[in-house]
Image 1 (cartoon, helix red, strand yellow):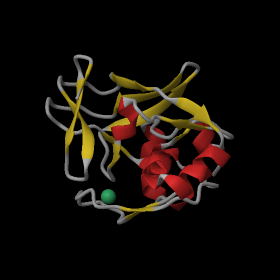
Image 2 (tube, helix red, strand yellow):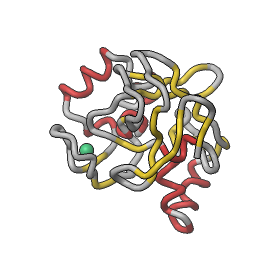
Image 3 (cartoon, helix red, strand yellow):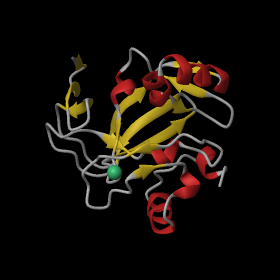
Image 4 (cartoon, protein in one colour):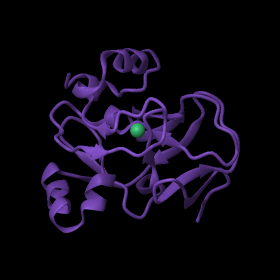
Length: 164
Ligand SMILES: [Zn+2]
C-alpha cells in the first residue's frame, strides 16, 4: 500500500507498519495524521467491539481522540526507541522525524507520548530495542530520564504534558 511518494505500509516486526520510501531529516514532516475526531465514549465502545481500532486511536486534546481508521496513521507502530514524534498543530496531528530516517526504515513513535496521565490503556511491548520498557503505559509512568529527553526534543505534545 503506497501513501503518496514518501511512505508505504508493509509487514514489519509487529504486523503492518509505515516504512519510508525516501530519507527524512530531523524535524521533517513525515505525514499528517488524519481521521475522525471522536469522544472517549466512542473509543471505549471500540474496546468492546474492536480492540485493535481502539488501540489505534490517538489522543487529540484534553477531551477528544482521533480515530485514524482507513488512513495511514492506523499503521503507525510504537517503539521505545522511536524515530518520529507526534506534533499537535492548529490543523491537527503530525508525525515529524526525530532523527534521520533512511529509505526502507519503519517510522515509529513512542505511544506513551500520546497517553495522558488519565489514560489507563497499556500494551505489552515487543519492539526489540535495547531500551525496551516491556510495557507501554501513560506518560506519568515513563522513567524521569525519558521524560526529560522527550521534553528536550519536544516529543510530548503540550496537552499531554499538561496532564502530568
Ligand atoms: Zn519496547
